[in-house]
Image (cartoon, rainbow, N blue to C red; front, top):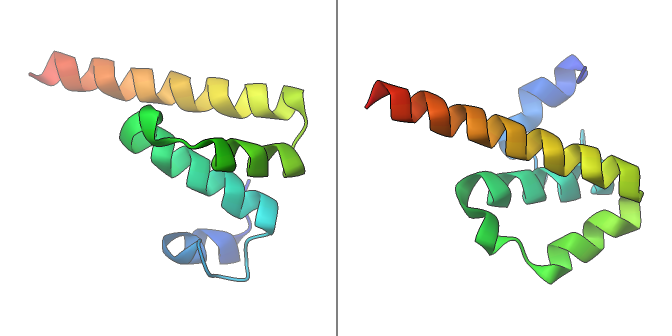
Length: 79
């Protein structure tokens, strides 16, 4: 669970001191992945590897992919 100060600061995640460098790297990755996974760069991936190990990155990517799929299915069902 995110602390309340991070929830409040989420819109300002790129610059808000409530987030660590690792959290910023993860949020940047998540934002790009959610908009268009093809826009995730090698530099973003390298930055994630500086802060997280392989199991954590696998969990992050699987979680994002799962929720992205859920949203896409829900949107398709509404159409």
